[in-house]
Image 1 (cartoon, rainbow, N blue to C red):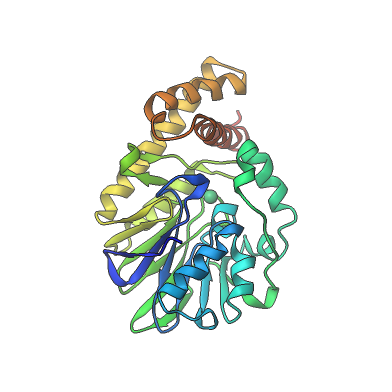
Image 2: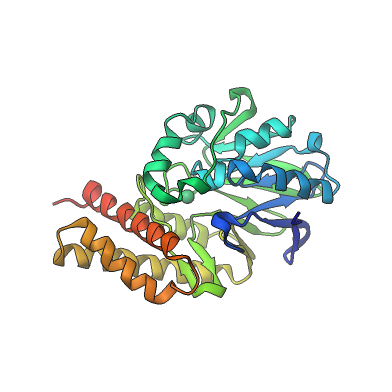
Length: 304
Ligand SMILES: [Zn+2]
């Protein structure tokens, strides 16, 4: 069984590698070992056993977990919420208010994720409803005291999805970014995009990045993957990459009218850059999904 590893930023912060899609250092959940322990992100449904083992290793009793904080209700972040809530019966689940309905009743969300991720759905597990009285809905600005000076503040962070929140930990000045600042894996060429359907919104992403830039940050805690210093540099870098990505897709739509041909173009392009880091089936699916998210955004918000 794998254990959670300490994060350089703080001796009470631990990261658990969930080996998402069977890739190392691709999906994380974070554990704050504080008087009121908190778990940021909940992974897929099958992450429960590893989470339990990690808590055991850290000598945190299941009854003591105070908060579960999925950043948004995509299944790689919130899929495990219902399972963890059941296993950690005192925990409140903190969720962006636009995501709460899906957490309480995931019956629409699961098939929609299945449509979006296609062949990769076998990795995604399932979801279980979270009892309504266990959920605290947030809009941004709410603070949760964990003891010893640790405080998590909810930050409204739409763009990747409208139901996205980041969580800012005040003592370490670290931001749990969810998917708001992309996927950052220096071992695989740095940033990759997270612009999925059905509700990626480019301008919202940019204004979220702008808002994050005005916060007092020392660390970014990426779900995909890890804690990094130099937060402002990384936010700038992601913004530049995101703009390049959206502009490149806009450019291609002028040249090619068939969405499948556009996706194919980017699958080929990204395979050259990232082929050695990801299985072809995963790479194809991720790229197609991220192109589809931008195409849908263009259709909804830029059709002229
Ligand atoms: Zn997401």
